[in-house]
Image (cartoon, rainbow, N blue to C red):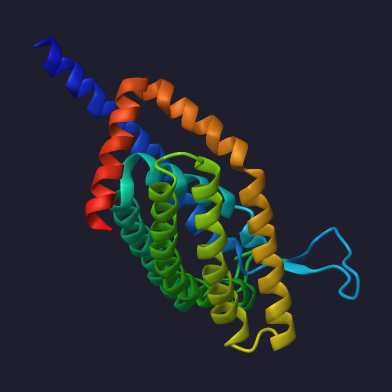
Length: 246
């Protein structure tokens, strides 16, 4: 009876960890789609470039990086793939709702008229289309690179697999999203597309490196929450499944 209670408690803690990580992952991914329509100038000056531009959608993405790496670590390829499919479904759901909202006329007394609403959320539609394509592709690449480094280092060097997977996957993700959201519909020129994409990618890369201590901290928090033995068992289980699937 005591063993059964312990097993149930352990499973509950696993579910809580997965639920919290998934919640942050999905919420920040969708937020990035909604606010990503706004382009900003970064508060730096580069020689020959001046102030580089970036999508404000880069702000929520570091949380997505961290959540992906931690889910990879504790729940393996299957966990990330399931979450990716759910997130794509939620982004698609947002796409449908925004499409419906664009068709419904604003009331005469609405503080936001149709022109303003359509200008913002009409552009978000392109971002969502780009993200669905880029997100699915980049997540598959992220998982493959993460487990390549993890298997090669035999579970050591968390920083290498976390940063390495982000470096590769976000190169694909960034250029796809900006290209489909802004360049294809003619919102920006080719030179601006390259500049914005490069800046976004550089930002994500720097953030990924800078967030490495956070990943180690959260890894430790999860270990303490699950219990060291349970955490090690979960990580080992995820690694074994990954080897068979890889």
